[in-house]
Length: 395
Image 1: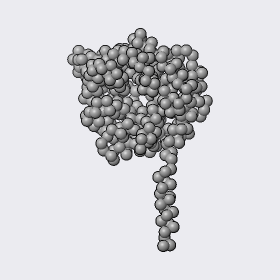
Image 2: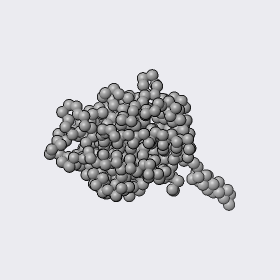
Image 3: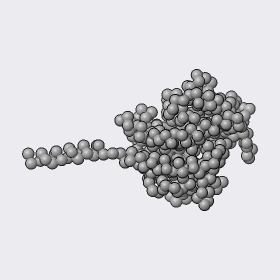
Image 4: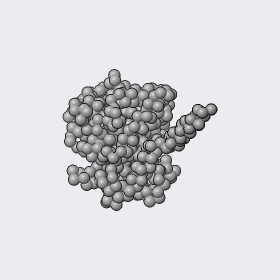
């Protein structure tokens, strides 16, 4: 009987531990409170037609017009902030920054119209259901993207401009833009859009990956025969290296395609890519800018690659049928998001050009956007936190 109080005490302690709040939930609350402040300041700093891109050497906000490939990420981040906070002032900002992107339909565009429209108009439709304001633009953008598919190559062309001797360049980033096609096919009933997405994904799966499931950044195709002319890693350390953000695009893209199609082949690819990435991550979960950078462990980290990877891993944890893998993916994403929510990576109010995350790497070989904030890092960081909190609320 003397042990009875100790048993009761142990039981209470177990219950208390089980009911303790997840530290990442607290971190998400902190991040979204900061995001409301930062993005309201961002909105005030932007002139009409400007979209945030990064910061300059002096730390000041650097912007672009709607034509820059990142223009959809700022409105997309506003939509996620609104989703989490319910703040009506943020909702007004989100609409204000989203609707002008309809002008992309009148411009010459490239594959990035998927990023630009899906992140902005796609989230607007998801959160408001206002199909009259959103759906025509969304579907028209998807049709514009699908028109970039060449039947001979079986992939959508990335850019119309070329350098070196490229004839039909296709980058792994394209996989992200297949979501526009898949969602627009569902909205419109136009199955040719989904056919274009699966054709591109199948060809990418066939040609873009090495035996260890790392991928090249860019493949150049012969537009007449579909033959691969060259394989390169333009923004990575070397052609044969694993550029971290490229691996994140691949993981996210095939996870998304698995969700959209229920294809075992795409799921297998996503799991293999995930396992390759996890085998290269440092202890805090934030990738080096290239997994083969010669100066590891002193190489720069890329918070954008960490945020994209975390968002993809959370979704993959809900799709895989392997419970051990699911736990491993979610644990890794949790670690990444906690690291990104720490003082090392998260900005203080009013600083960092009003972005959230520090320490991203854009294009190291071109010495462009090195160790700075990037709009897409914030977007996928916020998306990952929303996905995580939503997942936990369902448990």
